[in-house]
Length: 381
Image (cartoon, rainbow, N blue to C red; front, side, top):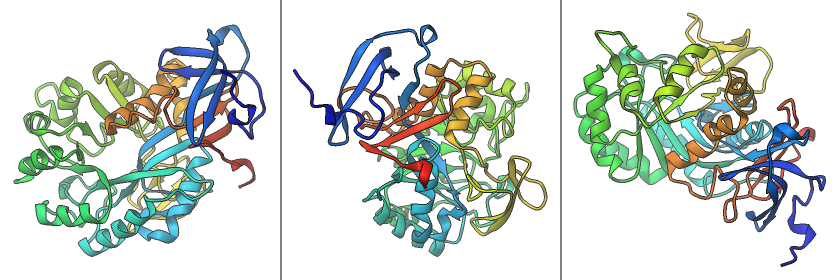
């Protein structure tokens, strides 16, 4: 079968690449049509034996608060700036992540996100849905969350679900009544994540048994591992299949990342990025908080880490820096988050998948991004 040339990376240079597929590396070309991959033409290869660029599945970030100076809680006027900012760093799809706030503020933002999720503006990453990070968290483990935490009520959650496609909810399992909510919502396909919690090891294990499926920014804002009180971290390391982690090498020490990699089969990486991502040092909004970006991090006035400035291309480089092969680093930025949400057409490059991909040179510098077949002109953005 002859495939028209205009189906292949239409606006990118026509050259061979090292393309990462579910079955391994292919030296060749990716062919796409109508936003989907229709073929990967080439032969198996070892990228160490050539000097060609890498083509990887587009990055999927399941924890994004903001970017480009804008915060999700600002509403519709901020969404396109955020998605255009993150696509410049290789994120082809993401979950818009809310902050703990009064019910009317969350409802207002969710209503606007519900409409935005139905579209994808040209030059933007795809918003797959919402990660509701709070308000169902422990007020004793807020981290950088504003102090509007409260116990979850099913009627309230039902109202939120009518406003937007909520894919993930962070919840503290030790709060009375939350075990029943975890069980009910997980049966409806909502991914319930344990986070911002003072829970015990036993409460973490019970939450997993009730249907919780992951942990929000593993190690951060949760009861730590101690050899006589394993805490929520211990429950994750002993029992979890999935957990998200921020690999900016500031939130979590490389040694602790290695522990998690050995313990949690499908550990996946997120940025937990704020409005400060992609921006110079200065003050930015994070929900109702004002945070300061300096020295590579984002903090509240008291010094508490408040999200990050991490981008997914830097996350890839950080994982490789601490010893992961490029193929495994890619899995943890693309395939595993897609698998966690049950998205078979994203997070991998194969016939039938979305044409979401990134091209990087041999130093792992991002050179090209494609979202659903659209080549993104991020260099002139």
